[in-house]
Amino acid sequence: MQRASHTGATGSVAGLPGVITAKTSTGFFMQDTDDCVDGDVATSEGIFVNGRTSNAVGTSVTVSGTVAEVRPGGVSDNLSTTQVNSPSVKKVAARQSLPSASQVGSGGRVPPASVIEDDATGNVETSGSFDPATDGIDFWESMEGMRATLVAPQVVGPTNQYGETPVVPNGSGLRTPRGGIVVSATDFNPERVILGTELGTGVNADTGDTFTGDVTGVLDYDFANFMLQPTSQPTVQSGGLAAESTTAQAPASSRRRRSTSRTSTRPTRSRSSTGWPGRSSATCARPT
Image (cartoon, rainbow, N blue to C red; front, side):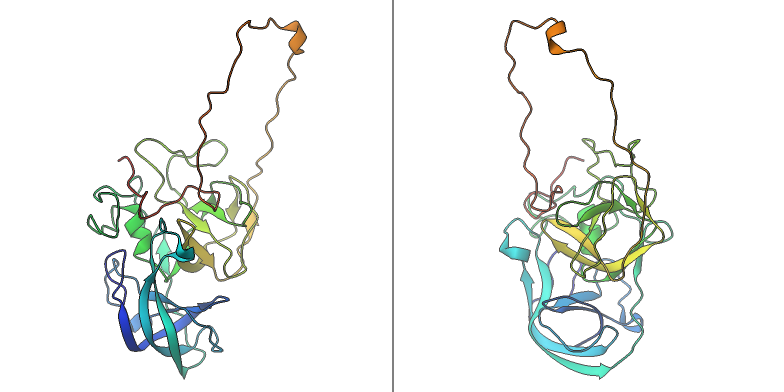
């Protein structure tokens, strides 16, 4: 059902096989077994099934239903995700080995270092080529719905009010002294992905923190961001970030005041509903 593009094949499907890799409040993720993968890293081996099941994670199943492209939350600027609607689920076998997770980072698939998208003309779903090796938005799309392991991820921003945390695989990008990742006119950090909370495994972390090991989950997309939903609880290791301090200045009355008034010239900036800059079908074109 998944193709080398930002949209999958849609329509009726019967007997789609896979192993349940994670369960959410509304459905479950499933993935091809290792012996059934097509060997093409540009095509995902996983998919979301929009319907609850009593079958446990690790159960081999077949699914029939209607494959559709859905924009999470009905938000037009979101990329679409491929899912099976109105599913009929048939149990094949319990207690099966989970399909292998794709390693992301050193020793595995390495995200593009600077380019998010460089050939689409406004909408990656209807223009440009699909280049997971060179375009960050295509790289993450190629693993939609799959199990993925971030190798030694590092936190590049504080957990937001929704429990979501921006991270990058170890060795990514130009880092700030406090542990963030630098944005420039030619680098909008395609390595960055958000650790989500869909499976109840969110973390509370700060810039510069790390984890005691790799982090494995299923790759999802929502709120204009690719998200890794951890399938087990990651353990945060503090980076020791401390609040900055400064020396108190002299009282204003002792300083010479300008006779002209000042008005704020700070530009306002819009942010996605997650609190992190988003990556969407309409806004994905970035300077390269």
